Length: 337
Image (cartoon, rainbow, N blue to C red; front, side):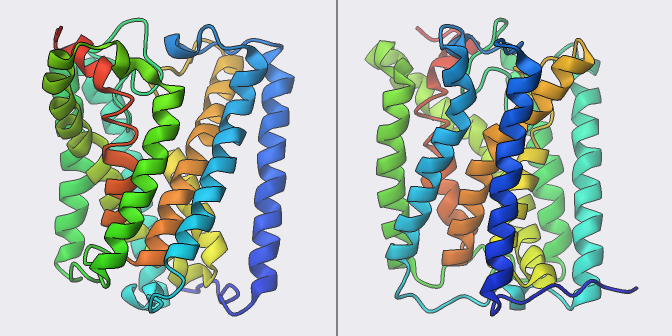
């Protein structure tokens, strides 16, 4: 099988071109939203219902600015670490291509399976997020829907890929072992504190809960989202695919962007998406990429800098946002007051 050899990380010009292309792509997506939306976004997002249209459109870009600032902070905190040769954790080029394409194909089939399994049990199609996560929804999930969603995602996107690749690769080769625990925990603590403050300011829903309700619902939110989206994201993208992206491209910048695009790709069907018309479908897909590419790139950047996929999972996923933002949703789902 012929393989495409891309420029190596020692060629910063290529990384600059990649970043430039990313900026242009981001601007084009925003222009597409403005062109298609005509001042209205047809999404089921109660938390954003009172937010002006311009602010809704600007939201992902403002979030991206914060994510870029966090990348700079993570770079500074990890600047004295011994560099992790993550590309060495991937197999030789032709096998890296086969594994990458095969896993991406499997992931897409897994998403299609979720679109079938959910309605088969009388629920909505399953995505990488529980319906209502982050932005609410007009019809909250039932406990059965939430539990089946988490179970499906955990088995399909975490357990099966992990067991398959663990036959050949060690946990260290899958970015699941720390090479510098002290620095990893420093990154986790700093990012978690900053992101928690930002999200509490933007999504203050937990302050409206009673202390008793929060103490009951928060652990349920942590466990449900940990198995339903945190572990699937970590294993599928940042443990397995990321080293192969770096091996194939030889470019940290392109690897980070591919990590972000893959993360967005795994959210094609969200609880807030609208598929009523081609116009709504186009806006939904565009907004998925605007919403999730930035967080996905940050997760990829942190994993490249630390060599440890657990760092982003703890610092930037399991607690912030899914406990801080989504505990009120879980209280609603399980009738906790």
